[in-house]
Amino acid sequence: MEFKVYQKEIELQSRGWRPTFHDISKEIIEIVQASGVKNGTVTIASHHTTCSVMVQECSHDLDKYDMEYLQHDILNIMRKLVPDYSEENEYMHPGPIHTQFGRFVNEPGDFTSLNTDGHLRSVFFGRSEAMTIKDGVLDGGEFAHVYFIDWDQVRARRRQVNVTVMGTTEDVEDRKFNNGEVINTLRKYTPEEKADDVHYTLQLQR
Image (cartoon, rainbow, N blue to C red; front, side, top):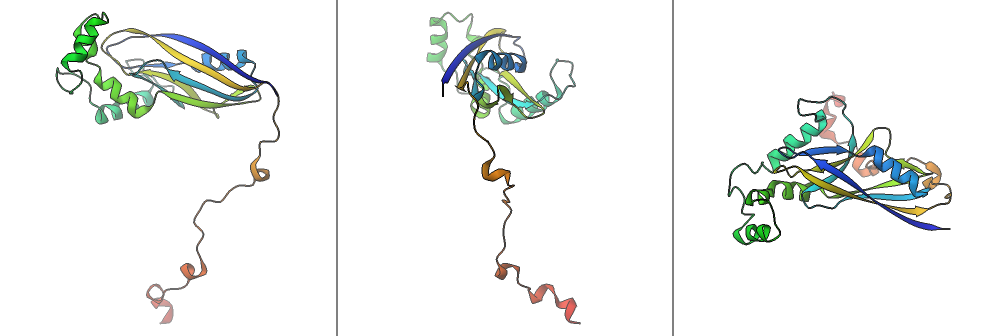
């Protein structure tokens, strides 16, 4: 059985001034198809520490910022968890040494280090997602889309998504576990736990 690894990089342009949600579903599907992998996995990972990858449903409706309603809901929740960096020294980061390092690597200004909110949101949200490939098709269920989220809103920036497809170019055996029998994970009570309690059946004794 041949095992194959196929990698591609997707370049994106974030707008700044507000977190950017990029729908990269079409590109991921094209990469999976071009890889030649029939059965395996694809990992979609951010190259950046202020960005995340999310697999979620497309909610279709757009607000005035061209954000899907579900994306806006996610942003609202993240703002409650990690408030926007709107005032200098609102967070401990960046300190003076980090700010000086930004100048050393030719950042355009000290303001570019005021993106602590983006770093923290990326920590909570995660920087990568892995999805299954079945019979040459990305398995996202009926409604899944792949989104790259740039939480950094201090400036417009070029961003990169790293995509790695791994798997076999051949067919696999039957995937059904235990012949497809539905597993019942609900609690199973013992006869003692199901026994009658007189406190609950007093009305039956009248």
